Length: 219
Ligand code: GAR
Image 1 (cartoon, rainbow, N blue to C red):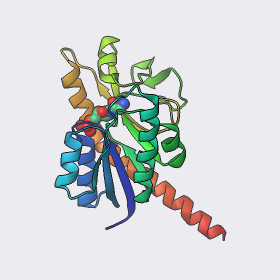
Image 2 (image 1 turned 30 degrees about the horizontal axis):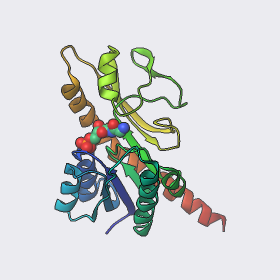
Image 3 (image 1 turned 30 degrees about the vertical axis):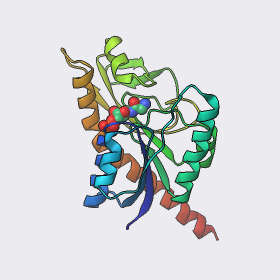
Image 4 (image 1 turned 90 degrees about the vertical axis):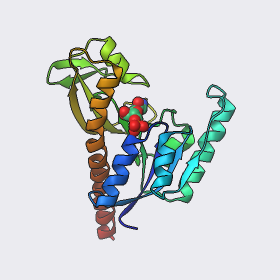
């Protein structure tokens, strides 16, 4: 086991999880994935199991049931806390985090989002094609196509209580090409995410280590 401890939350195919697994295995990322949690039976769970990573299936039966969501929030926070992660990475996690998770892992939860998001949490983002709408939420790839944007991309940001509006860690553009549909565009964005996410994790972990070292130095 090496470096920092990462927990990954995922709801989908898990290609971003795989990029993190590969980066840890190759040594490009000096970290160990200590747990993967999924709210659905999904490819990410299978990838975790194949890589020999502790995998937890924590479903929500009724997404709109507030009591169930609150219980899920506590259970998720407690099961992650046991693994003592330095960083929680949302890699295709499609559930809004609840207040317990947000508080317990404040400042050390990051998310990869399939669109360009601005540094200031505002409604527009500066791009190579000028200022464009910032696209948040669960359908960012579809929405970029529907809006007829010339460019979109991927952003890794810190998770805060405001949806997809926390401080940006890294961001990169992807062109929208004539004839693109949601699948082709999402594949292009994902290929960017697979490089961006491990780099962003590395950047955050390095910053945390520097902060810890300077705190120690102060004593
Ligand atoms: C990724 O494109 C990620 O940005 C997106 O889900 C996909 C997961 O793909 N996340 C969101 O939309 C979160 N709002 P994967 O399961 O193959 O990594």
